[in-house]
Length: 479
Image (cartoon, one colour):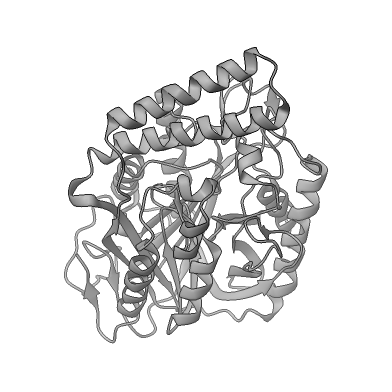
């Protein structure tokens, strides 16, 4: 393949791939065995919002952005041989709607020929980036369509540039471990957590490390609702340190894992209503980012690389069970009453503990009302999502459009027949996906989940099926 050639609108020819152009399956193709020599490319495009833009992530945040602490980026890594190609994209934003993802994928396909099902678009979930989605915790937020148009162009530019600048490469997938970053914020002993770091290492023909992909499960919420500076939080500090270490013209990117109940230990309920606990500083974000970077760098030498790995992609539509919501008239009434109670307590100088409870009740009523409205448009009590699987060599990456609880991720990893990493907040966003046990305990994440308790089993069953199909003995197309 010519490095400077973009094959727009490639068309599938079964599993037969011509030598002079990239062709990928209509819904993702998997070919077994060693393929032609790998080429890789990477690029980043700045996506920082303008001064004065609202920042997403906290319903309790007052004020708009006052400046940029560290720029936000769309980062793209493309891997291709003459049989297949995949694009891995990381965005320093809170989350993205699935319709936006679909449109961007089509644009990428037109620009590069990479099939939409082979494009993974993941949000890092920074809580100090632009508003890119109307969320359950702040339904009054509006999305700036002008910014979203520019974001779409930036993503396409990043992937197209990465595609154009492909070079002969070797790739390896491995893992590191890190302690001291994320804790389980719903558990008294702050466990379990997933200490594993999923790593993709890309080398050039001379053996020099050129790119590093990092997958780790933790909310990027070191900074709280009082922060009014744009930042990618601790992942950006990790990326900067990795790039500085591996040298000039290098590249690193971060995608999140099953971080639904993993953060630095801050209470999700208190964060949601604006209570700021100690340690929510840029200095602490840098400290944690450097911990992640150092653990990643320590693991790199032990990751073997290959110049002809199998690449593949599959996409599966899955119906998760939806919660049963009260009639809209009832949720409207509950929200009005919560608003009135909060206003009365605030006006009468109620004690702080009463005000906090009233703020939490009002937040929960707003979330339930928001989801009850959404549920009216969802047929048959089902919440449809996309599960995507990418295969790189003998490793699978399963992308889920949710904030999945860590216990589910650990269980999935343990049951998978092949080495598997989970990428959360990818290709859309449905909110939280808790464990069945968490539903019994309740709390912010459970109120903020629109799927029912049985969703855990549905997700794991289908993710394991997807992983099995990625490693089937023959080329497969999955509709």
